[in-house]
Length: 154
Image (cartoon, rainbow, N blue to C red; front, side):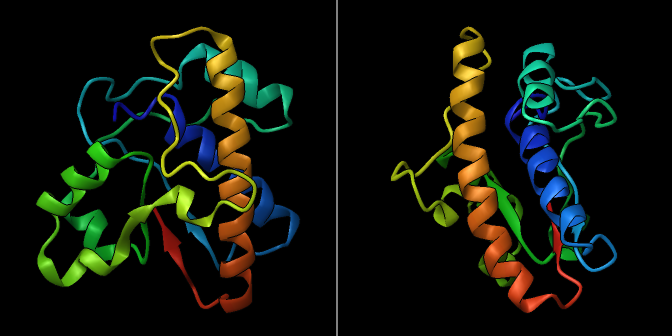
């Protein structure tokens, strides 16, 4: 939503996987929120703490709001929850809806459909969020790395 917790954390995980595989020239990754709450801000300190403990650096990411141009440009637009997906469906032209989906669709170990928003809770919620993101990003990376044809993900 505000682009300071879940989405930048997912970018950190996915960026790490892509770099480990040497695919950073083939897969472009970005992060954007559905709302303009935190434009220009760094990720939440708790998100940075938790991701850093797992070996991901997200300190360079700054919050921004998704645009119609993003939807046209990127091959996949991944939402963290139903509310964000609904917003994206309203924003996107009908012919771009095939690009929109929930990130947890790629999860292998967790059956939850969405990544819970940890913003209003304690640091434990951020650790849980990262567990979900690592699972879903790993699953998505397995799919994408088999197709490596200049995918772009937001």
